[in-house]
Image (tube, rainbow, N blue to C red; front, side, top):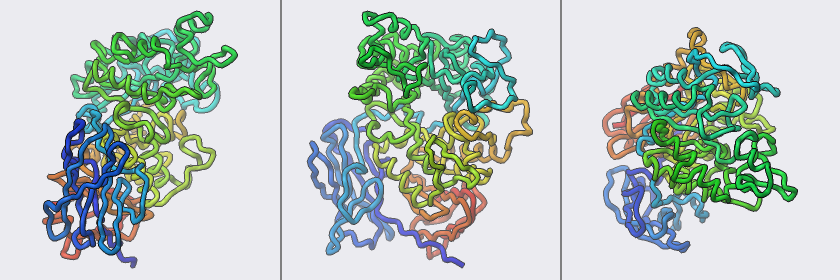
Length: 607
């Protein structure tokens, strides 16, 4: 029998309230920064290395408490710059010093990229910290039964037809879901534990996905028009749900009135709205002719799209529509083309409008890859966390039967170890301010990827993915249908209809997993607002602590049976309460034994 791993808890700091006295200080404030260090670890002194006008300074930390197991140190860090970076220097006597940053402890000199950060930027609405977001692709969620005349582009389908996920008809297949259909199913969202509804685009466009908008001035009549959105938003708010829209600020459709005017000649005002090449031809997004790309250097376009007046962004935040924020499509490319880069400026301008028009609203950016250079908190509040959550979770749980990449890479996704998975998650979380990482939308699948059930292969592995989704740092986002085990081999195939009339096709065990895990999340503030301390990293199991001043919760997920782990006894003073899972911890004088069961999820409250 393989003995359990003896897990060692090292020095720790993160951006949660347990360690940082003020998460949104003003310039000139002095913020208490706390560090915990295991007793007997050989640390003689602790200093904070803070960056002041690009020059490092050292502040001595003072011991201010502890017990037989660990010591606490505190130092005040002056917020001299809007983005003040710092890391911890641990003096180890004759051994020299080590550095502690967002990726852990390092016995070498390191760059500043993963240093902790204090920023003066407001993090966004408080409700978003507690949210569970539910993504709906309107054409495929639910029909209201209303009869509407179809446009010429639409290829009608019966609700139970298979999705065409290859070929020219893929964006044209029309199932007829609408906003009143969604409104009629809000009780399902509430029963699962969802608190926010996110809709992919609702503006008219010549496709079922509507990312090729022909207008931003109205809701697609096929979805029920403006009145249907007002009814849905009102019903959401009356039910205690928030509602978030989806907007493309990167491009329009080629039948948009602005583009029609732009084509009339170089003297047209709207011609400046779009990028043109040296031959006078328009530039499209990724070479797709139907998606001409906006040139956001145009002040008139900026005013119309996201100004604080009657712009696209602001209009739909106001009554009677009352959206609670926006998810911005292809935010990484917005305002960027060749030598021109207005990306971060545009993000801040959109944020300014939200803050003025609807201060309690969210602004989430779509980045399918690295978002870290742009998310300082002054613009986008967070990102759809493909790079720092979905990608590493997919690579850890991917079934051998799933041969394809999940995001278009020519190579299949590699099945990686738990150590690699944790390293990726830590690096992406550490490269942005804590309060930004805490507002990312974590996801296990979306309308642009294969479904987690297809990637992971079995309900047991979906349960493991859900265990991470609802306990990790950030806001969980569920793609409609994941909770009942829908499958899909790619982003198009995943856009299957909800089988409302076929309850026998629902995976009731998976639905129970989602409901139970969401309920645990809602019941325990540490899972929504606590710090994050990694304690288990093996090939087949990973685990972390979520902690506040009042609560300590241990989460361990395993993709198969593993050797188990022995944690220091100082983590538990009285008992361990099982919050989720069938496995109990073994607590005695030698420590806390986590049995090596798997695949599965264990969540315990340590008291």
